[in-house]
Amino acid sequence: MQEMIPAYVEDVLTPVEKLVVHQRGLRHLAISVFVMRGDKTLLQRRALGKYHTPGLWANSCCTHPRWGEAPLACATRRLHEELGISGLALQRAGGTEYRADVGGGLIEHELVDLFVGQAPADLQIIPNPDEVLETAWVSLPDLAQQVQSEPARFTPWLRIYLADGWGRVAETLSANAHV
Image (cartoon, rainbow, N blue to C red):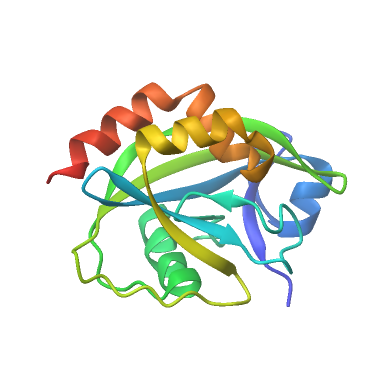
């Protein structure tokens, strides 16, 4: 089944097949979710069968909305599909744009809606093995240190968030860490 996602073709938002979007490096819509528990964020290590960046650590989840799908609905859906997380209230935490080579001749050029959710202590995480190899809770300072010392272990977008736009993202995450 082809998955059609919103991408810009000649400056017009158009439904385009997901793989084609990445092969052509088209600017497209995306979401990224940071699930927080106090000062820690939930990371996931991408499954080895993913078509790009397999085995790398990323934020809690990220994806592309389907054509016609609202960003919040997409974030909620994908948290459940990837991590088995349901019922978590998500707050929009701004947005960002980046372009990155993700290997295999594929490019992510994303306009990202960022979301933050505060996890209760008893949050159940049931990773989908087709999507997620493992998960870990990491403090924001430890994450920044790990990405700096071993960048190749992390997805390009997580490295970009930390290096380029992290001030705004971290501020939002910290503000939501104790809500």
